[in-house]
Amino acid sequence: MIIQPASSLKGTLSIPGDKSISHRSIMFGSIAEGETRIYNFLMGDDCLSTIRCFRQLGIHIEMCPDSILVQGKGLHGLSKSDTILDCGNSGTTTRLISGILAGQSFTSTLTGDASIQKRPMNRIMVPLKAINAHIEGKDDSYCPLTITPSTLTGINYASPVASAQVKSCILLAGLYADSPVTVSEPSISRDHTERMLKAFGAKIETEGKCVTVHPNSHLTGREVIVPGDISSAAFFMVAGLIVPNSKLTLKNVGINPTRRGLLDALLEMGGRITCLNERELCGEPVCDMIVESSHLKGITISGDIIPTMIDEIPAFAVAALFAEGTTTVKDAKELRVKESNRIDTMTNELTKMGAHITPQEDGLIIEGGYPLQGAKLESYDDHRIAMSLAVASLMASSPSEIENSECVRISYPHFFEHLKEVSMYD
Ligand SMILES: O=C(O)C1=C[C@@H](OP(=O)(O)O)[C@@H](O)[C@H](O)C1
Ligand SMILES: C=C(OP(=O)(O)O)C(=O)O
Image (cartoon, rainbow, N blue to C red; front, top):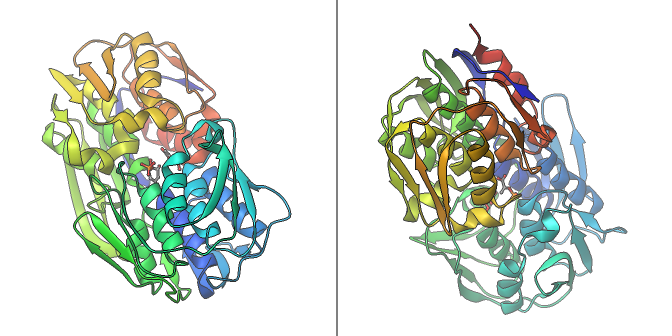
């Protein structure tokens, strides 16, 4: 993919459905009783992997012209798959489905692509074993995972990592336990599981950083309208701020407090982003955003805000390149265990463009104000890296070429069409 520098960005985009919420709508719809109809589902490869897995487990999932229809079979209605469950590139699918499979009366084996096979699964294996699940993995930590039936017991688990995937895995297993399961985490991670499980009828309570699920909750199918994904809007939020003379309207963006860290960080940098029409969509706050070119100032982000913008940090790093002064990202070691090691991959590629960026064990230090030149860039098959590099390329002095850019189909299949639609050239 060749990205030409742009002189301005103008127009309106409808942001595609939230990936995290799309995954959960299929999973919870499958283990609920009756029909779940999902609107604005994200047709990205990761969510299609979730659909494939639940079809393999005997759930009828129909693609209708305007929605997805899931014929739920209840908590105990899944059936054994004849073949290995293929989670593709999706960490969310792999970790959440493991919690559900731990409560089934049949054995399952699951795996995914080369990237998934390198991502740590001990973070779910440890708590699952603690509730008496039988789970085995390659070298005790990696896919393929095999989960065999057992009787799950209640637990109070203090997760060492702020991860919605770990939290959700344990909560889902908790639906099948013999007594309540409580999970606490060091900082609050995205809470879509808690919100949506409650809407499906589960008995689930949140108190600060602790969430408790009560077993044998009866889930009932429902309508889900998926809000736009702030993690996808992120690329256009940053692009609209850094490209001069720009004004973008981003429609229907989810601004759940556990997801809006990028918005808050960009506002603190002096970004002109206005949220209009704030409303609730299926229990999730959403708005329309107006983003205008801005003079940004460097800031430090660390601590509790990090999990609320973890997938947006590559895009945030691009904004920092155009801010006055230094921007520092701390406490973000989790970036090292995503689809790629995002601290290293962003450093390598932005350095090729002339950026002054220094990797840290748990983050990045970025000096703003250095001009970028076009370069031959690598996505490392990581969708967030491909899209962040495309945004940086808009501001380079010459065109850039992004290798292996097709990976955007994981979370934002129409990203390059949308980028072209709003890009103006002199
Ligand atoms: O629960 C989810 O839907 C997700 C949680 C996050 O991962 P971690 O839980 O590993 O932080 C995030 O990076 C991922 O894109 C989606
Ligand atoms: C980390 C991501 O997803 P997952 O963990 O589901 O692969 C992501 O989408 O940036």
